[in-house]
Length: 79
Figure 1 (cartoon, rainbow, N blue to C red):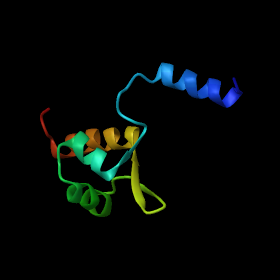
Figure 2 (cartoon, rainbow, N blue to C red):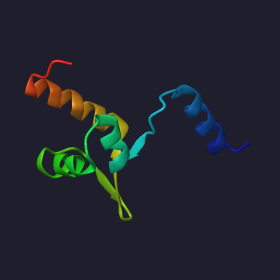
Figure 3 (cartoon, one colour):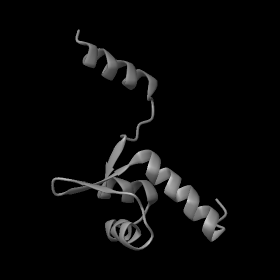
């Protein structure tokens, strides 16, 4: 087994979270319970960190959850 394969296997064993590390806009919308257009609006107007890979817009899972926490704190949302 190559070193890269071993590292991937080790990472998968450590990361038991069912949510992928990088999310599409659709997956991020599902995680937040909102429409895809809301995610695009959050990227454009509220600074949700995202990046393009080819034609796809992707969002790192950890940055999405940090953004949600920040929004909840700023908006004084009770969860």
